[in-house]
Image 1: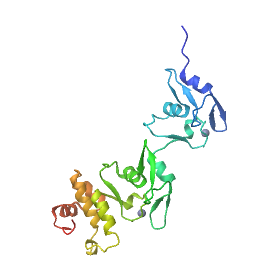
Image 2 (image 1 turned 30 degrees about the horizontal axis):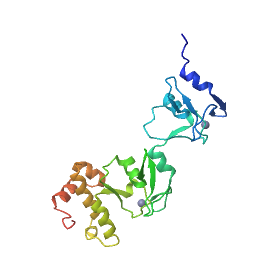
Image 3 (image 1 turned 90 degrees about the horizontal axis):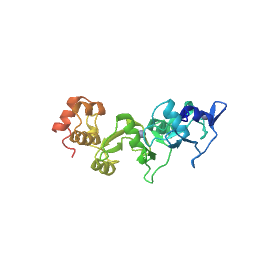
Image 4 (image 1 turned 60 degrees about the vertical axis):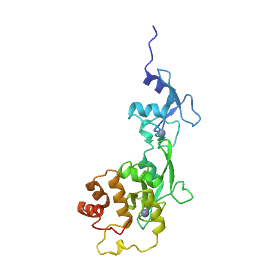
Length: 230
Ligand SMILES: [Zn+2]
Ligand SMILES: [Zn+2]
């Protein structure tokens, strides 16, 4: 009976220390990462194997990159999961006006776009999801600051597709509601509040989202205030 070699031993036999890095000396894939055949016959990227073994399981379709820049390095201390937070931080710059502008790929309309989790997503939408939690695909993420490249979560709000169109249409006009003394909400906020309520969000949650009192949200929903907005 032949004894099965310990998988971890087998793994480290294929590596060599170079400075802080642990360099893979065996087969590579076309991306330039090392590949490792596990004891059950699966062939996997070596750095992913090491990270899953010594740090944590990798969520499906999430990339793992080497912070040291060496694609053959399998030192799990040098690795970073390509999380939404990392992507957003690495591809943006803060402007004096408070906007955090996406510096990565942009669509013709000016919105940032990024591949994440195996699909393409608008950068500001990724930012919204990251900070406030995942929202339904049918809900739009809109800008308060009218800077389409901005991913600052404080400059984003949600609304329906109709709001998105209306938003473009109304841009530049003076809004009646905004001219009222002490009006904290904008017309766009009001439309968003109504849309969110329809999705089943509680009044308290909506109030927190827009930084107003629960009674202000109730007034909007009952039509006591903002009834001119349709
Ligand atoms: Zn390294
Ligand atoms: Zn902004």
